[in-house]
Length: 382
Image (cartoon, rainbow, N blue to C red; front, side, top):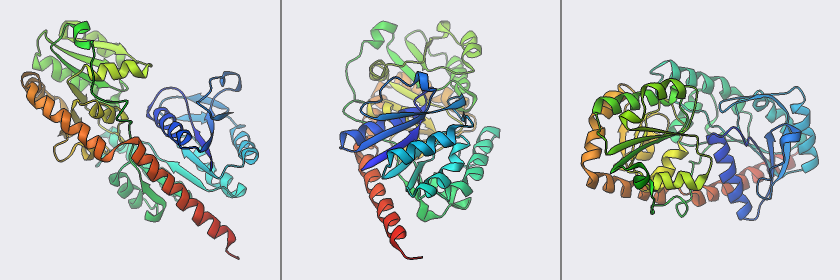
């Protein structure tokens, strides 16, 4: 089977990681993959494993959304006509091209699958979560024209159904991680930091991630010199937060860590992973931390609460996050046995439900089902 994957390779975000992990896994299983992504032609030189690459021109690209150029639709159409894939899988990048894809693929008679990534909240409790719900509401009529839309949780499925996407068009296939790669192991992190306990946040430093609530709780809890808080990532709020919360308070800012093995070493050397987001999808960073055996604390934004429910971690409400963390941080500092127990439960949850291999198998089954339905529809006399 030949799969044309449409997504992006930069800047680094969950969409980029998702595309890399899934396409590499498909290649490992013997599929042919062509990778169509937003890039300038002269900059598209790095090979993405064994994928044939096609650059799609753009005017602007960020971690959140993409503005394609006026030529992008024609470039994409011509590329698909030449490649002749069996199926197109679009890892949606929140760009105007998302709305044209069903028409393009219908014209070329190619079945179309999408993964819909935008973070969300169970309820629009604040401006940020309300804005994300508007994204779902705006996209729903267009998603109804895709052969299938992949989401990461039943909560997302229910939200799209409420906004008019037929249930038969939606497939729930969660994110997954490789538990052999993301696993507990030795690390020199605590020696390097001269710390007995290490807490870590990994992700964008932006309003929707609510990192300031974590930092405020850390300061108010007065964690002492033997505990460190690592902020792994960067974003628009980094400069202002760094000036207030620094090494004097035991806060270490690593910036964005591009090297995957270095990120794994950070997780292996840490005790507790904290994700205080106001909105989420299904955080790959959370799954990676769980697979590495960290005790995890996360809000019930998006599907993260669903991942940790029934004892796999601590689930916070998205209201008064700083107050909740101020109470919990000293408990996790003073009771390492609880951290160890929760870390074991977290890894077991990943092994039971969120392995990449399991979820790629479900994706293969979805492709087969979509192709079968497409052939039946194409062969039915009008």
